[in-house]
Length: 363
Length: 269
Ligand SMILES: Nc1ncnc2c1ncn2[C@@H]1O[C@H](COP(=O)(O)OP(=O)(O)O)[C@@H](O)[C@H]1O
Ligand SMILES: [Mg+2]
Image (cartoon, rainbow over all chains, first blue to last red):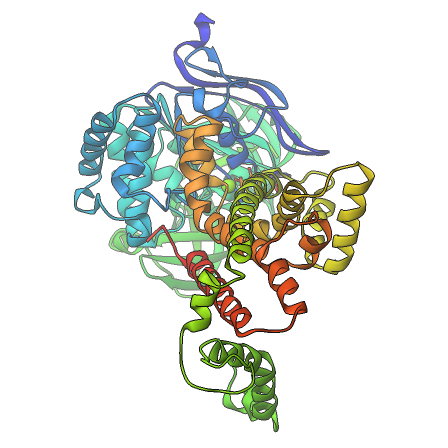
């Protein structure tokens, strides 16, 4: 037991089956105390299922779940010191906002007065004090969202679970709430487990991210790690935009892999575990880590011709055709146009790669 | 939103048919109501407005009979509505929240089937049932029969209401440390309440108005209002029957109206 007590949540070899459909295929992960942890993946990959297993609404087919060292997977939901912000908020429609927020405290044995006064403080924290006497249907989506948050935080759970809480909000409000959530997590010191299918949201808010696909964990790490060092095709493709190139690994020297892209083009990048000499794998190169010049300037320069420039507001996306090789997408931020060059379509130029821009993927 | 072109009102003859239907439906009720205020002892000649037949109901020679029947009717209706509504609440909870259990469709069919079976069939079947188990006919048999046939009437508005209540409310309650029972009493029950009241009132009125089944299963000498009225009518229609009928009609209209508005009310605003 003692080896697990430092983790807020530990999921050990958890399997979830619905009939003969396996929704979660042996997931193991540890979530640290006071962490903002995100489960990220496309719709249907099993994020909600995992969250509901932690909350106690789904039983665990196989495996175990620990909360600060205590095994909880057999406890009913009301005995788990874990609260949930539901995707549709699930505010009790017949109760006032104040009574909604006080509900959990009352159920935990606080007197009505104590519960209400603490609920009032929570409403202050989310700046909704003036709506205390209203019913949920009289609030906007963003306000309901904050009530749901206050209600779940009021009983001071050990872990807060949030299932795509921002997905119903418009873009502007969502951005504001992302920051607010992040601040709340810091202020309260409560461990957050946040579910989203929005990779940008995950990168913005999280201390660590677990990327999931089809009931399996694909990669676990900090936002920078996941973005810059995707482990496989799925992660590289799902997080951000990237150039995925087929390469063959011709040699590995001093931890650097020499890769052929076809058409005589060659690149070296950091070797990764699981990709040996002779393997045919994919390489991910982030388009914003590339820049163009009329002469080769770095060791990793590839000769090509401009096919097209596309203006996309903050960036210009350039499509480059390598001689006899694959196409590349290069992204130049508009704010970088003083230092970085844009070529006209048809022009010959070199595509240069910043150090560490290319990443070999375990397919 | 039908556009004017496809408006049903533009079909020729629609207006006439509608009027005819309304007349056939409501003319007898209107006539009975009007003639209940007639001062004449004849049921066909109008002699001016009076309340004398209403007074006759309460003080006339038949008043004792009617008062007893009315008391039976109300006791039975209130008890049957209470019991059948309670059963319907648990049936609806099990049906809507019980997950996809195997016999769910069958169960739903079984609950609502009595609404479609001709009442005379139910009446005969109930009578045979009581006879075969050797139950003496009396007020108890009426009560049991009423509870049984009131369940589907109480069930329908309750389950309709429940269908609109997402199960995430109960989950949220349990997530916030409520036991299953607390989640039911503090969240589900208040949300269901309009459906429950509406179901209760429907069951009440259906029980109060029932004639066929009651007539079959009641013992000799036990009367409810409808059977007492029927008994009186057999001796010839007197205007006091119209007064009773009008009062019963009034109660029905009030109950159905309350039931309608309650089922529409929203305790979430
Ligand atoms: N009660 C259930 N019965 C059968 N399949 C389910 C059930 N709940 C979820 N699933 C399936 O499990 C998979 C994962 O669902 P879910 O956890 O909701 O995904 P996510 O939240 O990542 O979108 C989906 O394919 C979904 O269809
Ligand atoms: Mg989900």
